[in-house]
Image (cartoon, rainbow, N blue to C red):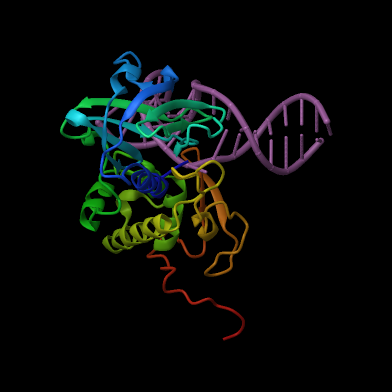
Length: 291
DNA sequence: CATTTCACCTGGTGGC
DNA sequence: TGCCACCAGGTGAAAT
């Protein structure tokens, strides 16, 4: 479930919690670890490897939470659909489906909980650079020209393309739908057929939606919380996602839902036209009453 | 090679 | 109340 804004919010809160003192915290020991959430599974004994490691930094790349340890060693946690990563006091109740507990130097605990177990802890070992090559650029900083180049190379529907982490990394189902609504682009439009203007609109809309979502600490539909256990608030500001049948906030026509590549896809058939330039929702005036 | 489908998991919801 | 089908923020392997 967590997409870029939720992951960024987790990272922000983790940094607040972990780096409040001058001395970087250490993982004293691993109190609990379910082995089958570790990648590569047979690679290394994470319990032993992590014991005594200092956490020098926590950052985000796409939907990954990257921990940088001593000697440039890194691992990252992907939250999958239902993962939570929190820092809690030792006496806090341990939730069901807790798969990792690391005891920190100040006795607090770093805990990873994930009921569906789609999340993973990936050990990267010592490396200068996270294996970036395999995933696409960051949506918050990509330029319209680069997005256009990448979209030109695929004939898939634009919605499907946005969800492809190799094409652009960090966008998931909620923010793909929200960004396309904001840009006034129909989800079925073919990626390589977007005009230059449409790609520019999409680039701007995507960044705007993601930034606003980060400001509201992400969307909590069910499980998602930040490292302090707090829910996000952006779900209240969704304009199309999970609003099937409800009136479009711009034109009042009912929001449509289709299934695309196995994923629920929400859009306004009036504001997001499949052919032609479409109507930029930013420009549409609410057409109330007789004017 | 590009694209689509499916499997991986658990839990919540709504219909009967 | 119980049972069951269906749905969910993701992604990588297998099939087409």
